Image (tube, rainbow, N blue to C red; front, side):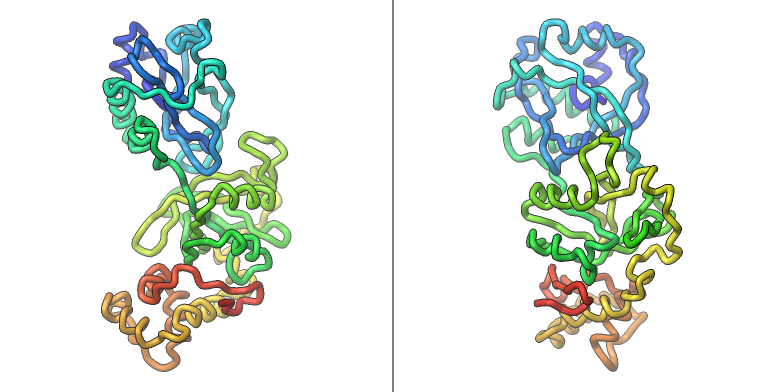
Length: 359
């Protein structure tokens, strides 16, 4: 798994190594890590890249098949104690986890921060761009600033959603945004809880919730325990934690989610609706409670904002029981909770385990 200068084939050749040593497999992400500049290199006249463990972050890069490990070790200065190989687990675009090897700065060589040379930063960024990968995380790290690789949101699709029995584990971490959302996948039933098998875009959508946290590290620590996730590559995991793209109305956002391991999923039965709430018969009551919570005490202004933004288009009119009308629009997809939150100004409306509004 390459994340730095090894992505730049021109630089690779200029350093005297054959670019054909690396055969492209696919783009990937190294999860719960972030990039940093931790070692001085005389050859680069400044700091060079490293990856450090950091919960909630991810490092974009490329998975290569290596034909000459000795050559790659020599380029990375393994014999002289500059870098060392470590085993890691990366995630592919479809959420699949893959075992790999990457290079990290040896512990004895690490410093808190070593300012990199601009030319080296350009080499890394040009390499990332050649694979259509983002570069902002490198630019931020080069300035020793918090990087953009933090993902502070989680996609829930089962017992941790509002109205479900374990929602208190989410609410205790005081989410800053909690709205209905969708993710491509297939829902299966595993005893008293569901699991989601990730599928390619244009497949079926799983109904769930997109939730953002101020302290994602603390939230993930508890959620990992609840979901039986013991770390990437751990053979005893009940669920794995991966990054997925989530639809929140007309926007898409990255979020963590938990997917059953192949062993866990083997006993699952398909849920045809792809919605845990529909499967449990609570979809109507929960959307009713969500609508009521957004409208509570400010129905007139919320409805005025909905009309002003033309969220409904020409397909529906707000008539009769307003709460039921809005709830029906949420269920049908004619109104997204993101749009409702924009109209109400309430990005978190709490619902207890009985599916009732909970101020």
